[in-house]
Image (cartoon, rainbow, N blue to C red; front, side, top):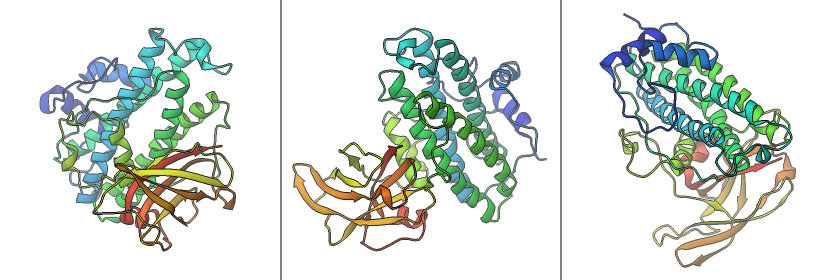
Length: 357
């Protein structure tokens, strides 16, 4: 028997699957809503998750991808629930004056209620596909967000949504080419991709940026998204240990210069590792920007300072980089790459996330 999204969710919420709650101010019952609670989430979200059939088996790469997507959706649920709560309860830094002239408190609450419910549907949907294929669902972790006010929160929302917009197409390729039943969900992922882009347009417009950053957005790879996600997860708090997901977690790459939309030199730092010393002869910095081929630039003057290695590198924005997100990574070798996936395979430190307009 093939299960639909709705029937699988109802199975999950009636006792087959029970997930712990670590989320603040989510919809009643989430992540284990009963059918009535699920209907209320759908109403707030503006639609249902669809009633098409789900796969009853998945290839290994698809399981890994869905584990990543479910973790990411649950993180987004936690973020937007906290963001909404801060505005609703007049937390300092989240008042209407902090929103600027292009947003009101009432509209921000209306928008974030819808976005929160939509992300809850996305998370439930990812877990429904896993459940339909006999895989354990992903439970929410505990999270920590480095934001203190409305502007920093909306910028973070833009940043992680940009990462999602680059990751979902990579997952679509996996679903379409691995020979499994998940090929039927490529269109579903395309629908999510468009929906996330609609959200991102609002995040940008509130900041007085053009709603769409560039004609072609920056891609990425699942390993980059998996690493970035862990910046917001309290270590050891995940009921489903992240170590069980066969993706790579890279060492951190920190950008210490404020990037601008022009060609300039940026300063970087990475943890010092005597067993893996960063050098200009053995390593390089690679940028992913728009749909351009990855661009490799030399590492300049790497120097150890205590437990850090610091270095500089050119940021050649005027060579055709896209507005919005650019991803930086320190790689093994100094040659050129022909795909984002090849960059991820060679990465030692990253991703460094650069947002410029």
